[in-house]
Image (cartoon, rainbow, N blue to C red):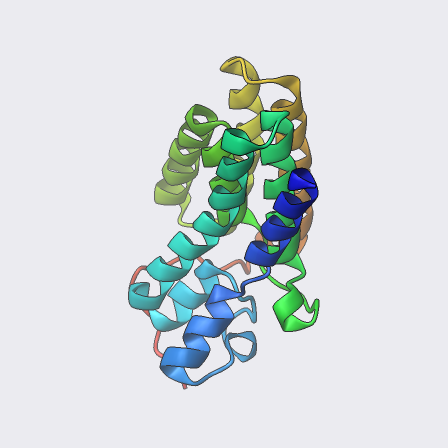
Length: 202
């Protein structure tokens, strides 16, 4: 019962579309109609700047972190509960209940939150990989893919349970799949580099 409730909580938390809600609340606009149309933090930051981008990043991380940590602390088997609840949060972020299962975000920040809950050292190491790639190339998509691939690698190297490593492989595969359009734009030379200053909009 506790396991099922935790998984349901994970999905409900993951379904909270903070990028959509905050933009609606502050700007009275639909984030799905501007920029890339994605509800995630990258599109919010590109379009409205860091004052909305940073809160969306933190909230998207927290909605993965909270159910994963609760599983680790309170519901045995702890690592399995943590990654299952975290996986439910990622699923909710991708297809949020509160947006009637319409397309959501690409799960990167939420996935990072899950790993901070179940494998914090691996999450920190993958975060460093993300940051290095991002600073060098300024492609959020490439940094996200590199960080995603780093998660199972560091989980294995740091001795986390096999369940966490396999979850990392699945998460990296999902992140790669959800960035397939970005990969196509990279091959075509049309992928946009990230700029910290908000671009002017018509």
